[in-house]
Image (cartoon, rainbow, N blue to C red; front, top):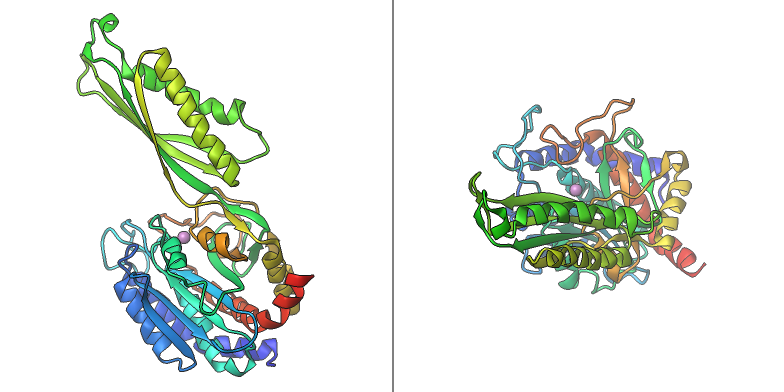
Length: 405
Ligand code: NI
C-alpha cells in the first residue's frame, strides 16, 4: 500500500489539469438535466482511464456512472458529485466567469465534479491497491430537479450493489476554513415541501365591504396563523421552518378581489416533523378560512426528504481522517435547513454527506453559495480529492470492521 505522502504526490500530479477542467466547467454552466457539454467533458476524462467501466445517459439523463474493480470481492463504495448550475447571472469578477448570461455555477458543483474526476484519475493509478469496486456517480439536476432520485431509481446503487455512498459539498463559511472537514452523524440537511393556498371569497366594491368576503384580510390572518404553528404547536427542540414567501391578490385600489393566493416553504430535519407540519398547515388554513366563510384549497408539493447521515458511515469518515493524520481538520457541524437530493441515496443504502471547508480564513464572510459573486475555491481541490481517494482505498478493509462493530 502506498504511503499518504505518495498519494499526495499523485494528487499533486493531476491537480493542474483538474483545476483547468474545473474552470472550464465554470465558464460553461448548464442547468439541471441539460448538462450535455459537462457530461461529454466528464466522459472524455473517464475515457482515458482504462480501468473504469463507463455508463452514460444513465436513467435517460445526462448522468454518468463509472466503476473500477467491478469484479473485486470486497464491499462496493460509491462517491457522488453533482454537475448542474443555477439560473443566475454571474457578476463576472473572475477570468473564467460564465459565458452564458442567466446561468452560473453559483454552488460549486463545477468543483464537486472536478474533484470526482481527480479521484477517478488517482484511482486509475492505484488500481492494484483496491480490494473492492468503487463507483463514481456524476449526477444531474441537484438544484431542485431531483436528479439523485432519478439516478437512484435507475439502479445506480446496484450492479454491483453499493455498500455505502458518500458525497461532499464545499462550504465557504468562517467556521469551516479551507481544507477542514465538516462531519455530522444523523440529520444534516432538511427535508422540504412547498405549499400553495388559494382563498376564494366574494369580490365587490371596496366601499361596501359588508357585501363582500375579503380574501386579503383572511389571507393576512392565514399568514399570522401559520407563524404560530412553529412557535406554539411544535416541540421547540425539533427544527422546523414555515415561511410564507408569496402573497398575490387584487387588481385595483377600489375593488375587493375574489381570490388571494399564498405560497411558501416548509423545512424540517425529521420526516415525522415534516409530516406534522403539512397536516398542521392544512388544518390551520382550513380553520381560518371556514371561520370567515372562505373556500380554501391547500396543495403541497414535496421536495427532498431530510438528509440523514448513517452513524457507521460517519464513523468511517472519522476513522479515515485519523488514519491519514487529519483529525485536527475535522469539525463537528450543525445541521443546515437547505435541502440536498443526496438524501435519496441514503434512503436506500448507508452513507454520509459531508462539508469540505472552503473559507479562505479570517472572520470576514465571502460570497456564499447562490450569490452572483460566488466562485469555487480551487485550493480545496487538493484536500477534496485526497480525502475521497484515501476513503476509497481503505473502504474494503475498514467497512467490514466498522459495519460489524
Ligand atoms: Ni449545491
